[in-house]
Length: 459
Image 1 (cartoon, rainbow, N blue to C red):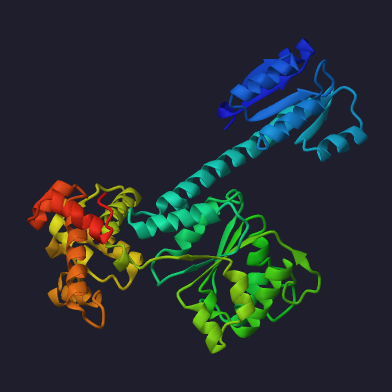
Image 2: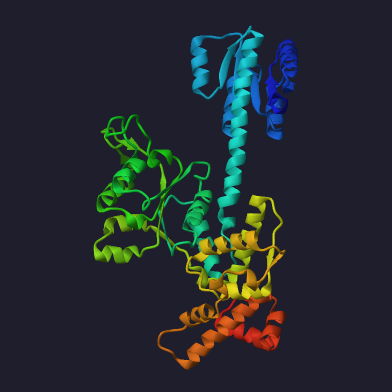
């Protein structure tokens, strides 16, 4: 570990610098020793430094000035303060302002090396955390919401607008449309992105267990509570709490959740001390909560607390032009996860996939892509490799008919069919209008007229 740790030494006493540089270099650290603190801070601003070791009393700048600069600009870099004028009071003060450790000159080599080692381990932990946070942001940020349809572009616009605010967000949509992915995208678009994202499924736990899961419990509060447990609200402090399937909450839990949203305080189960939390709540449901309010199964005041910003995710059947993009995305994801070569879907297979109803939405599509990747022995996945329900002609016909209005008006119906065929041709031709026109057997100018007529984005 030490060979990758860069230590910056700041001390106007050059003899100390030479001794410290030799000691830390022999221990395997990469060391930069600078006698002028202003030059040292300039170097820090241009270099990748893991640990700073600085003298307290120097001309121009003090060790406290160095500490304040580092804490403001590089809060993840631990700072060790050295001084020949040490006192308990001075140590307490400098530790209060954020120093990692306080060492009095003259010091023993072992003492200094141990302190630097501890600081280096903390720096390594910070570095790993930052890499993990960056990886999480790449995996769950807004860029992971795949698609180019108008519907999904509207979703991304809402995510970008809602993300930076503190407002509660209610995400609605059918099962499998990607509500948790949208919640994570909101989190990683917010100032809270470095804080925790804590998720809880309100339907997966019975009300008694859910209360303890959300609010935590005190030792001895019920049979089996052998120790104090922090709940999801506490765990989400400084970050985002995602409440999935919020429509399944019991009436009592709705009352308790409403209180937390109003007061931002709660008590653990079996406790009496109020706990304050700084969280942003994002909730999701596949139910129509307005209808649940009308039926009396969901509290109206809680609904309005949750429904500050509403984000509705469209079902996959309403964004069929995104299916080829999503399929390619899941192919690459599976290939990366399993260290295999990606495969491609044939144009005919994509035709069948874009014509399917997808009752399970994106989750079902991902499942089928993975199945095809596992079971198809060739590099190209054809129609014959698709599951029966997608290849079934009656299912395909039913899917098309289901898009038609209940009361058939011939002109409107023909317009809808023509619009659907044009969209399908655009998908098949990868949105190259000349190719789409050839597939439809019409001229490019006529295609452009119909694109304008039906309000279809031709790219």
